[in-house]
Image 1 (cartoon, rainbow, N blue to C red):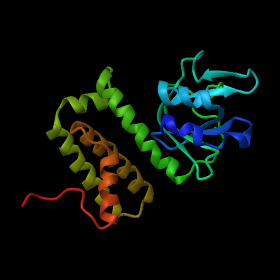
Image 2 (image 1 turned 180 degrees about the horizontal axis):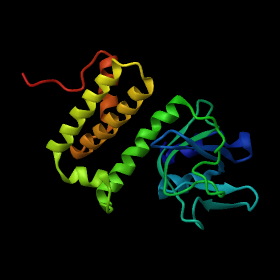
Image 3 (image 1 turned 90 degrees about the vertical axis):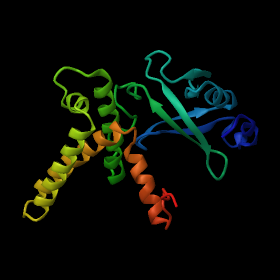
Length: 215
């Protein structure tokens, strides 16, 4: 949403406050719930860091102002009744004051949540490539270049196929995990991500093609 939309929200319903659900922009996990008044929302939109209104202190507070574990804003949306906010943000550390990644650590993991771990894995791969820590398989394989990475993807693809004709489901899962990891590395080497592959699949499902070959 934009700054000029702030005045159109249903502030009177909650006595000048709106609940704000914060969701991880990368994984989709619900991180926390807070409250915003007009000034907190304006600060969030203009400053790029999630800022709430503390009902106990009756003052604004920017998440992470003491811990350093901030929430960098990706977008803010309003629900159909204009009385609840959804904030997509990227955490720079544990969100909860108890040191957990989310304020809902006991929430049951969903299938979507497990798939969202792939985004976290992409971040880990990117970090290994950037820092090149000693003994990192990821850094070492990446340094060997695209041909070697492509070779590993091919090898792992064959391993998946071989496991698929056998009786062991755990073997299929394990080999598929190896394949996905190496595919992430290959995509990274080309400046791509699994999100690009997902976008292509979405377009195909909709009956369109993401890329049109030259005529």
